Length: 511
View 1: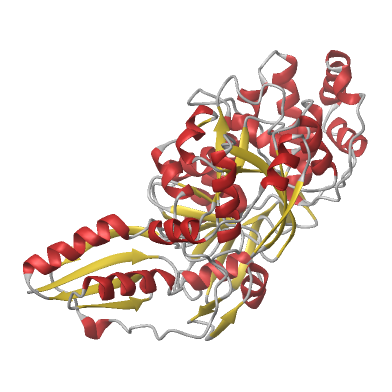
View 2: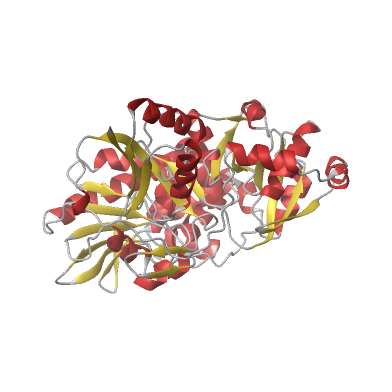
């Protein structure tokens, strides 16, 4: 009996094939595993009973992966229509912590972590060396968290006991599946209502979390778990690669940032080893151009929206074989100066000048603290200033505030285009001015922040509709880390019903 099983697998790294190969060998089933661009093919040629037994083994032992999107039996597969990939000599920074490997590692190692655990329990910081570099680990503490954040570190959550994590955070089945995937990515989780009340974990209701992703951290996590410590905070002190940050939409997993477990990889289009996000995106010149290449759209009329928090290249774009890439609406790089920002808003008209005066009288405490110039670009700079005017820390807190909104629709934040030197720019002044107007009227922060993303969705959709009237494009590529925001992405996909929205699957959304 022949059975062909197709696993949609959105990366060309071979580690998942190796896991299947090992299971084939252990099961002594007559089967082969082949790697193709976008999928893995499992071809079984054995007795029905033997194949059935093998699939039970797969069900019990094959790990989850962030790159699997579907799996099914194929009735007829045209082998001549596809070229099998040839594995290249690329060593990936990924520990394959399957269930068997986890059990084996724990049973075969007996490391004494007493000193580290006692230091952590006493309120100290343990500097822990892993295969990927150094991490600083500590119990939840507002003081320690703020100290690390003031030095520019991102504080994340290490889960040592996945069975008890639902006491701390709201976690869906999909969140759990991503956390436990063989790639061990970072997943953004929301604290339960009464947790993080003093800000000991985060300055918002959200935090990026992961479980152990290497043997050293696995053994330490096991020791912590045995001592009743179900989670810790940590920062990457000096690491080789940052972990993958992932999220998901209704129809796909989305890689936002990161490199561990993903790079280096062999790119079969470039025909060379790619070492990092920077290496890959710089090869093409930009994230948008790299995304065009991924979808084979470089010679096809295509609309693009590259919206990135930290880049100075955010824009709505078009690309065609005849004219190449052209920016339609740019996001301005504004001066990181709150007084300059307020003066820009005053210049709109006499009403906006009165608005700012009234706003400062209504919320004087917001303007008592120093505005920190982080030398930011694009949306980060704009949203940092908007966050300051709302009494928030920065654009990250602004985004997390938006995610706290429980409603289904927001208010209309002004998103208008202004022309400077013949180019179209998003008028950032109107965004802050209209938000201030709502705030003075008593609108709560969660609704204001949510409304920004909803209105940005409308802005993109309206411009796409206008572009389509003159530009025969059937697809729009959405790239840049802002599209990891569930509000923006979900609403935009519903709005763009006359065009196919494409998000990168094989590479991250952004640098």
